[in-house]
Amino acid sequence: MMRMRWYLTVIILSVISLAAVTVGCGQNRRAAAPENGTGDIAHSSKEKKMKIRIATKVFDATLFDNPTADAFEAMLPLTLNMDELNGNEKKYDFSTRFPTDSSNTKTISNGDLMIWGDRTLVLFYKSFPTSYSYTKLGRINDPSGLEAAVGSRNVTVTFELD
Image 1 (cartoon, rainbow, N blue to C red):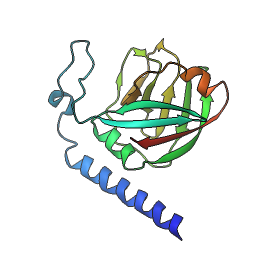
Image 2: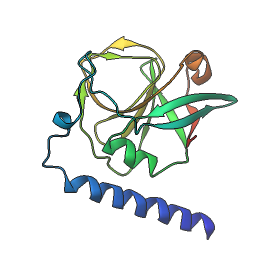
Image 3: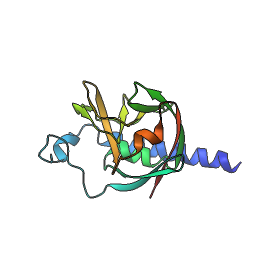
Image 4: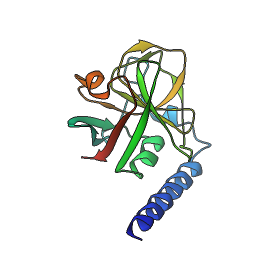
């Protein structure tokens, strides 16, 4: 019964977050967020600290200040069984959609946490050039040891606020 209440709370918070995001969907969010000189959208001081646990290894991470990250944050804490993909990333397909503002970052960095499409969470453990578009959620502050921690198979990952 307690677990069912928890699931209902997560669902209700997700719906509220999504509803709040759609209110401003006609606004140009990119115009409101200044660039940081590298072409990337600068992230504000409202970023939140997060922990990403993989087996016994814990990584400090930063959750960005955007509607997608807010919707993800409303689901925390989460423990997900993430699938291996392409020898450079772990992914998890949610059944619900996230609000997105995807763009082509041109380069993926080790430790990036993003949404592909509108429901696939991706944690990258290698850096590489890309032609795909993603919505940025956050990133691991120091991804040293991430590739070894996730390994080459599916892995269980826990995301929680710090």
